[in-house]
Length: 274
Image (tube, rainbow, N blue to C red; front, side, top):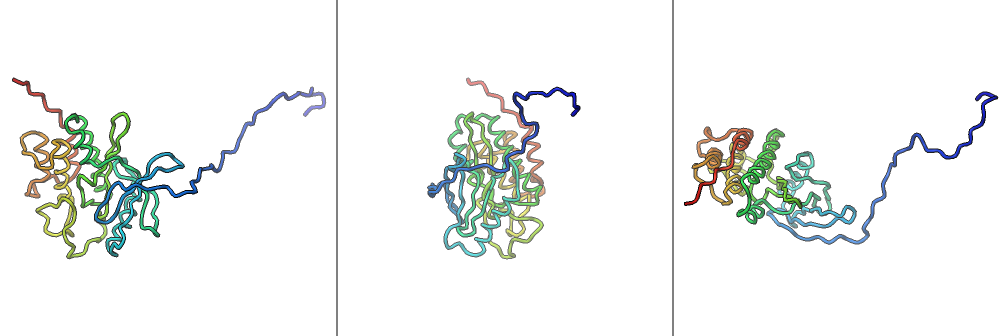
């Protein structure tokens, strides 16, 4: 500083650079958080709880007591597979507890069966189409990851419902998932799954074309609100028929093909009443 430089009186100052905080204080709940049972399946019970730190609901999936070794391995495998996936239409999982054989997952409000059943009389064609496409996008993503779900059903497709009425479809229950690059299935494994393709002779031979059959039943419920396959008398019926036809060569060979046809669907014209 030059000798003849007039001193400057500093009135106030602000930092030019600051260090970002490296930690955050979280509220800890010393008392156990109560669980509420919200569902049960062949291998596990599902509970929900309100997280005191975040103020939102999570779910816990806990293996049933006495679960056999192979089934317990499938339960752990389900978590590992889901943990490796990140997609809007697949349920998220967060942490596995090896002591209790349970894992935490995102909470969904209801199943697809329950949601459509409640809304069936008021659900528009556009809403049904959006739900169907979310479901199909989820399955298509799994196939691109080299995975086959093998247990698609109305109970295993979950729905998150938001205040404005929007919904988000989430695929869940990956206990029978098959990695096509690995051999998870024994040669004599019995047929499993809620919906089983009548053209499938052995569960170890399960392929994309067999998954397409189960998709038919879910699409039928989404669009028609019935747990039966409709006749191929309209565009929706023809898509469903092509998913479930017994001749495997005439079925859709990929879910991407199903998506392309569903995306082209237009709302049926309203027939005038007499």
